Each structure stands twice: as structure tokens, then as C-alpha cells.
Image (cartoon, rainbow, N blue to C red; front, top):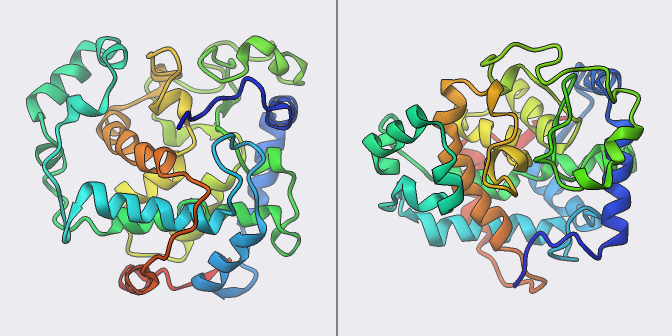
Amino acid sequence: MSHRNYKTECNISLTYKLMYINQTLEYVKNKHKLLKEFRNEYETTDIIKKMDDIIDESDPDTDSAQSVHAYQTGESIFNNYLKGNKLKKMYIRDIFSNEEWENLQPNVKLLYEEKNSFENLYKNIKEWDWLALVGFIHDLGKILILPEFGNLPQWSVVGDIFPVGCEFSSSNIYFDEKYHEKSDDFDKFDELGIYKEGCGLEELYMSFSHDYYLYNILKKNKVLIPDEGLYIIRFHSFYSWHTPKNGIQGYSYFANNKDWYMLPLLKLFQKSDLYSKTDEKDNYDFQKFYNLLKKYKCNKLLI
């Protein structure tokens, strides 16, 4: 199955066109005001059911509802990466393409070579079942599309995310279409813009999306998912960084040590997020996901 083929998808192209035009620094700052107050408490299982009403117009890989993708991603992580509550033996080098690996900064490549395996890089993590839970819930923020949760347009919720307040990178998809040149922010900022080199990705204003929305909700609800899992949720759609089309990490000049530490995890997650997508709805073991929701205090959320 071919993935992320955007060449012939007119509706996808339009979504990105509107995104690149409208996602300005001012727009993003205004949308952050949505995050300041809780509205209602929901059972997370009820939110999953609401995902049946959402089709992601930016996704060329499947026409299935997002609830199906949630189960597929979680199951893929269980099957491919976990053995019980532990991570299977995996090597960092294997998660990078040859081109990506050769384009890594020398000090980063040395770090990955010295640590060698995921087990060594993430020695502090003793239990790993949260990773499957992250796969199960990572797209819940797409409820922003639904009328009762904001009724936001697709271009403000789905698709690849990118930093605003700085120069738009050529590593973003549809760059050659020059949609971004129609933005009010075009030519306002140089490469670093309002930020400092090495400030860290967490200091950037990213285009407003389901990623940051759910990350913010989970932080405010004080769930027990570790920081690594919350980071994955926050940046899983930042493809120009973790899975660049030209093998060179976009916006790498903003990355700090934490971001390079997290990058292998983001790339590992991306493979289950992307390559688990099919239009077939299998029978899934809901109970194991529900148990994880309870374990990590995610079964009820103030949204």
C-alpha cells in the first residue's frame, strides 16, 4: 500500500492551501485562547465513539473513520513493539532511512550510535504499555471539527503541522505550490523569526491542530502518561521534522537535546500511525485499551 501520496488528491491540496494561507502567528495565538477553560467532562470512550463522525480530509491513505484508525494504531504498537509491558529489542539505526541517517548532525549520530538500542537510550522507562495507549488516543483532538467541540475547519485541525512566526521551510509538503506565499505572514520573518537557535521545539508556536489541543487537554487533566508519550502526541504530525521528504530534518536549527532524544520515539510511533492504516475494520479487544485508559487516568477528561 502506498502512503502519503498527495499528488492527485484535490481536496487534500485545498486543505493545505487554506492551512498555509490562514495559519498565521496571530491566528495561532488567538486559537490558544480556546485552551484556557474547561467545558465539560466526558468519558473518553464516548469521545472515541464521536470519532466515527470524522473523516480527515488531509489524509490520502484511508477513508475510514478516525475511531478505526485509533484501534489500528494501538494494535499495531502492541503487535510490533511490545512484549507484555516491555519494549521489544530494537535498534535506533533501523528507524532511520539511509538518507536521514547520513544527514544527521555528527553529535546526534554519535549519540544514537553510542546508545545503539531503544532500551539503552530510554533506560529510565520501565513500563511501555502507555505507548499503545498513545496510539489509541493520539488523534482524539480531531473532535475540534465537530460542532459541539468548536466546529473548526479541517485546515485548523488536521494535516501536517509547522512552526509559525518564522520562515516557512521547504521541507513542508506542497512547498513548491507556493500556497504559503499567500499568507499574511509571508516575508515577515527570517529563518529564526521570533525564536532563538536551539530554543527547543516546545518553545515554538506550531500551526493550530489536534496535536497541541489534545496535548494541552491531557496536561491539564494531569494524566499519568509519561512526558515521552505527551511529547509524541504534541508533535506526531510534525512530519517535516520527524519524517522529512528530503531526508533532512526541517527546522532542525530549533531542536535542543530533548528533541534529539525524542526523535527516535517519534519516528517509531510514526510507523505505526502511518503504516497501520487500512479501510478494513477488524474486531479489536476494547477491554485492554479501556484498562490502559484507567491505568493512566485518561478514562475521563475535562474538555
